[in-house]
Structures are given as C-alpha cells and as structure tokens.
Image 1: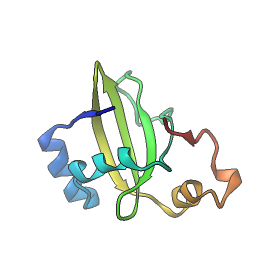
Image 2: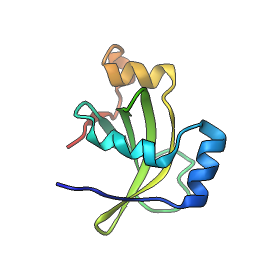
Image 3: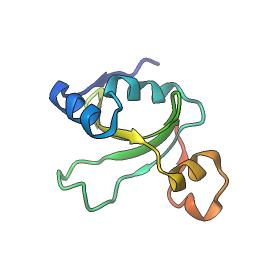
Image 4: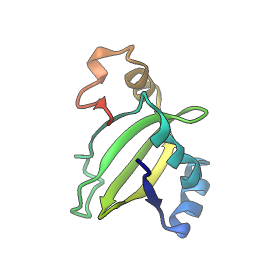
Length: 104
C-alpha cells in the first residue's frame, strides 16, 4: 500500500528552522515497522480535525503529527523525539506508553 503524503512547503521551511527536520525526511517514518501512534488530544490541536501523533525511526526517533485528508496523509510537524518519547518507542518505560499502540 502506497501512502500519499503532502505538506505545506512554508510549514516545511518553518519546521526545519525550528526543529532541523524536513517534513520530507519525516515522511520516511511511515516505513518504520516499529512505529507507534496515538490520537493527539493535546491542547495544541485547535484545528478541530483529528490528528495523530507518531513515533518512528529514520536515522533517529522522530515525533510526528499528521492528519488524514481524504486519501492523503498531511504532515503537520516533526521534531526529534524527547527522552520520554524515546523510552516509549523502545518500550523501556511501560508507564510512558499511555495511549501508544503499534501502527498498522
């Protein structure tokens, strides 16, 4: 199954400036068989659309937020995972896996 990924080029430039991660690089996380996800119920989601948080590895573990728009996956943001998120990804902190499940 091929995932159609899109993102706003201006958002990509801002994401690089803030986090030093290009959204095109972040898209490679979807090929990670160990990727985990959870619904984004954070207060930062003011758009009203369903967003998903993902932890996956490209060269390093990345934290990505995306949404599904029709048949496309739209990347919202990406950054290097923090220490707690890395523990969740590697499964070394059971208390920190709240809401994270293996991605399809």
